[in-house]
Image (cartoon, rainbow, N blue to C red; front, side, top):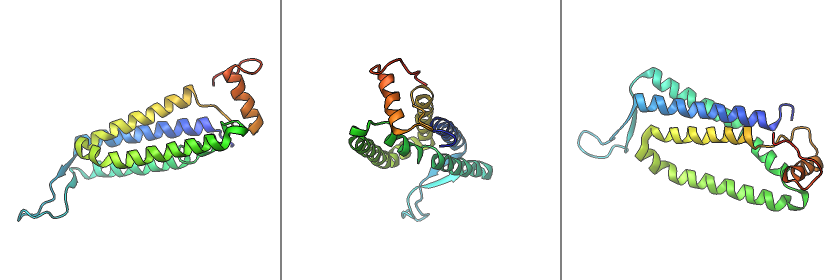
Length: 173
C-alpha cells in the first residue's frame, strides 16, 4: 500500500513488455529450432532449440527471469488486491468469483494455445506477448483506479462518482 496499485502495475507491465520484446528480437535473430531426430533417422527427443551465440542465450535467459520477477511484484499479486477492492460490498463475492473464473479461463487458454502457436510462430510469438503487456500498460495509465490508502467505503464512493451517480465527478486518473 506504500507505493500504490497503479505505479506497480504500470512499471510491471512496461518491464514485462520490454522483456518479451527483447526475447522476440533476440530469438528471431539468433535462434532456430532443429529436428531432434538422430543420425539414424530415429526420433531422439523431438525438436531442439539452438541459439547460435552464447551472448544471445544469456540475453534470452535474463529477459525471461526479469519478466518473471516483474510479474511477481506487479501483475501477479496486485491484481488480486485490486479485484477485491473495486466491487461494491453487496456484489463483491460475485465480482471476485467472476474475475477469478476469467483469470483461470485465460490461463487455461494461453496454456493450451501456446505450444501450437510457438511451434508455428517460433520466437515471433513473443511479439504478441509484448503487445499484450503494452496494452496492460495502456489500460493501467488510462483506466485503472488508484485505491491506495482508501477504505472499502471510499473506493465504493469513488466508483459511484466515476459512474456519475454520486455528487461531483471524480477524475478518471
